[in-house]
Structures are given as structure tokens and as C-alpha cells.
Image (cartoon, rainbow, N blue to C red):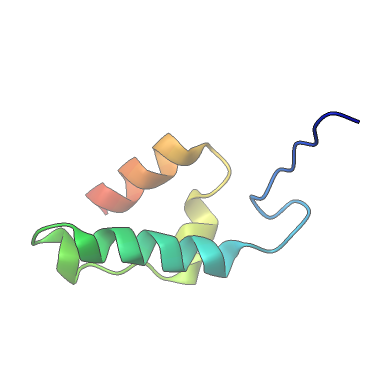
Length: 62
């Protein structure tokens, strides 16, 4: 075997909390008003699964 691809959007491993930490860390690094914004687990659960671009854009406009 030369390579393995693993889909980490919750299909095989529950990574929802990891997404929350990463997204909230990203928001904290951005200037206001984003830095005051936080996403919760329910929001991330609703947004995950349509690709990273959709997830990040959705978090930035919510």
C-alpha cells in the first residue's frame, strides 16, 4: 500500500470538537468583528460535510 485516504468529517471518526476548536482559533486570529465571534458544536454539525470552503465561508458570514 502506497497511500491511505481518510475522510475525517465524522464518517469514521467524530472530529466535530476538533473542527470547533480549529474554527474558533481561526476566528480569534482575525480582526474584529470576527474575533468576537465563536461557533458552537451544533452550528458546525449543520455546516460540515459540504467541503472546507463551504464550512469556512459559512462560519465567516454567520
